[in-house]
Length: 248
Image 1 (cartoon, one colour):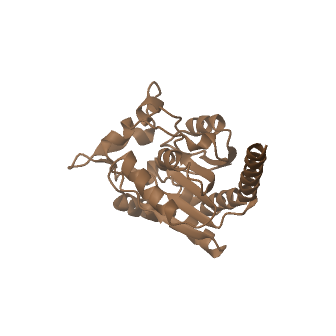
Image 2: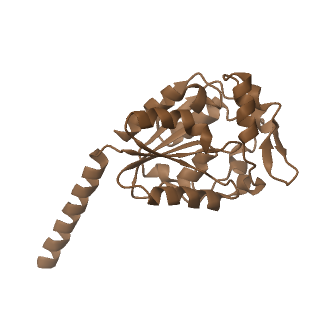
Image 3: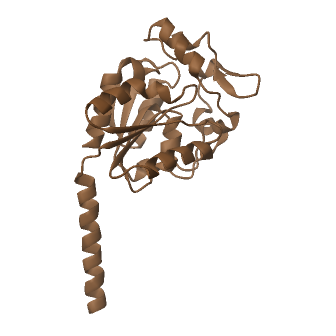
């Protein structure tokens, strides 16, 4: 009888702690960048959130492998104290799906990002469909890494930004390991975490309908904004509002 009572008390205490965590506002935001970018792509969103009192971490993904990017994101999560919102752009959606099962993660936010399920790869998600304008602009560099064609970047990746800003972003992009496209996911944290999705309706890299598919499959809270794939920059205020809502 005492064993049964002890088990029930432990279960009640665990449920109470879980409920309290769910209701606690997250003060920590971890931002994960996508391919053909670096962590500075989150600068505008980070500045807005910091001004509102959030602790913001911009993860520097090496883009050398899914495992390396997940390790970098997990290291950032390990450094957080308390509930955290984990946010991703583009390829970063694959990363947070793997890393987001951390107990500190209160919610996931996808911004024009891939949202694979367990056992899927980008190659599998892209097969059978007509390549987007963005996909057609991906090129190998001299070292064999994949980059976004610098001449096409301003119009296709960042069409709603001034051309000079698009050119600056293109110059800072990091090459991606081609093997990233074939990396098969083992975790899909969106099954177990509240999640939010920002669809960029003028996106020429990840088509809006593909984004809507990811968002609807994960039963996300969906916000649509008229923006290019660089919507995290061109519409930073709108993106920050979604992240702030996820933190509540």
